[in-house]
Length: 247
Image (cartoon, rainbow, N blue to C red; front, top):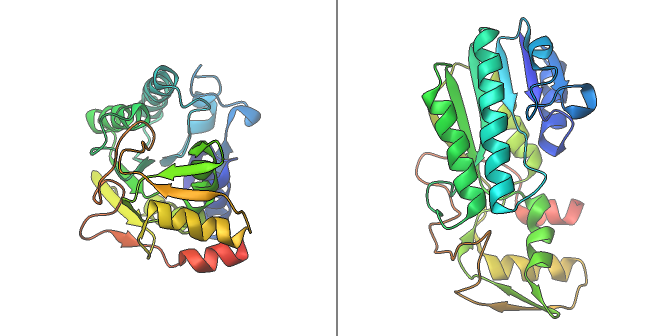
């Protein structure tokens, strides 16, 4: 098959591209660096010509509420229109566990808007909602630093290695469309504040972590259901401690 990976130069996208090429698929790594821009539509028609599958793992360069919504709506409309013109048979998109549970979060509202565009199109689709990547835990910690004290919610989080997410995305890309949502999460669940302590201890970072039930995560307060998978979810194989020791 010819498979186009939109965002094919990023953390997840490059991994998916390598996996699909290893299995013999003609795989295009599409990004602004390769002349494909979903915001302007530049290069989309050429990249999608003859493609059976499109995998969308793009992300907004800005997490400001207005910017991220504009990114996912504009990018989504342009991409889906180009796919319809190219008779693409399967649209596979990466989304986030919690998209439907955290409406106070501008980022989650933007992901929900992206999902709505996909489900409203006539293109068969699969949406993969993943839990938070292990690779992004450090950024969450640093963004919660309040004068040397890290304030984080004690709500449960289920970190997953980016490599495990890419493996599932690659499998979904070569499978039949689900026309629905699939969830994937890591094998471990921790209170977010406890996860931060584990990460900082491994880095010999002596900053203090304080549990705060009102601490916000991408603009929303959390509970123990906000960021974890539901029943029948796929589970990655990489345990957080193993990822931490090798990262």
